[in-house]
Amino acid sequence: MSLHPKEKELYQKLDLQSIPHHVAIIMDGNGRWARKRGLPRIAGHRAGVNSLRETIRAADQVGVKILTLYTFSTENWKRPSKEVRFLMKLPEEYLSKEIDELCAKNVCIKQMGEMEGLPEHTRNAIEDAMDKTAENTGLIVNFALNYGSRGEIVRAVKKISRLASGGSINEEDITEEMISRFLYSGGQPDPDLLIRPSGELRLSNFLLWQMAYTEFWFSETYWPDFKKEDFLQAILDYQKRNRRYGGLTK
Ligand code: IPE
Ligand code: IPE
Ligand code: MG
Image (cartoon, rainbow, N blue to C red):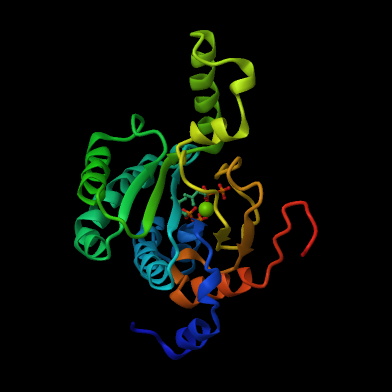
């Protein structure tokens, strides 16, 4: 494993027995990173891809099982069309370059969000990557692309309501477990750790249901400056947390 001295120091401090199973990341701050350098916002998005690659490598190395990455929110369509067009090109550019390494690492790619709303070329690139990695049994990488948590909950409620009005379920069959199952994340455990760089202290419509008991970790670093050592530091801090789920410490 190639690690810089600082990364090595952090890695040695990690308790490999209590690595978070599922880590979610809001990859934020690309625009501000670019502005600080007098560059167009899209340069920030492109630079952010390096952090994405490093983070996937780090997650794989320490044994995280699921990584959920907020790539494009349903609210991000409000941005200038030039920026949106660029962001919709980025998945195919990224996947075509990285798919071999992802396959070699046994990574399984999944999409969380509304596929229908995406341009055809973006959808094709993601479907292709999902097909190529479907049988892989290693790290699961969920790309939350055209994802909004409230929309996800409404979608689940509609599906359940259809079952109820069709008579296939009764009111008492509706449980928290059932609602979880009808979300895009259905079948996956909730995130243990949320990482949001860039100084923003909010969820921005990300995994509202799933993060009821997730540990939050924020940093000021803009996403393109986010390094492996930031990821390791977040896990190290997570390992010092005391998760009580409303109960008392044993
Ligand atoms: C995150 O960076 C990427 C997306 C939302 C697609 P931003 O583009 O939000 O960067 P800032 O927050 O404006 O710096
Ligand atoms: C959240 O970041 C979405 C992604 C990082 C993909 P935003 O930059 O869109 O969030 P707000 O607007 O600051 O809340
Ligand atoms: Mg932002």
